[in-house]
Image (tube, rainbow, N blue to C red; front, top):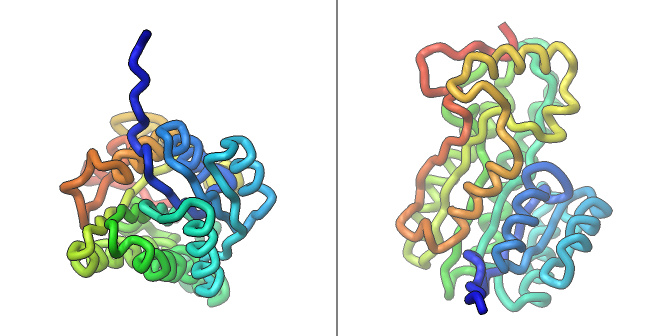
Length: 261
């Protein structure tokens, strides 16, 4: 009889935000397949429940607006009540807005982008530290290639993702003493619901950009989930404060066309 080996996340509890669809849902499924117990969270409560129900007894769903600190505290309590601990946090939740030059952007859009993409990550890291402090853990923050290089027409989005990059590195310095590792993932263009909902002119620009890449296609949520799995697992035990780019080579070269020129 073939030996049944435990999964790469056996014994770990992972809390994933924005997990009702796209990358977050792919991460939840991938982690569960590697024997993690998963807390599926999203502001879209029905979608989070659907993903958790699909996974089964190894998952629970919690409605979470990442911009509300009290909801973060309640979510961590729910995770500990259900599974006894939190070992992994994936700060995946994020929003995008249609590209516009800065003088045509609205203050409301700017503040909403920063609240979800940046404040939500800070709230999440702060909320899980007490649950991880004694046993260590791994925090995986989803930034973007736009958190490494600028892009015209995306000032608020890029600012939020550059902020995630800085939060990641600073938190890694603070939390290493507790055995908590903090790393960031920087996807390029991923075939996600956010991209699928983009206006036709933006999709056309993205298609032209993809054709210029060394790997001339969009990435998949499952590919990002595989990288998140590595960072969540003990396989990445010597990695912290680092940036992991998954973009088909998009920012490897000297030329990068903006989304809005």
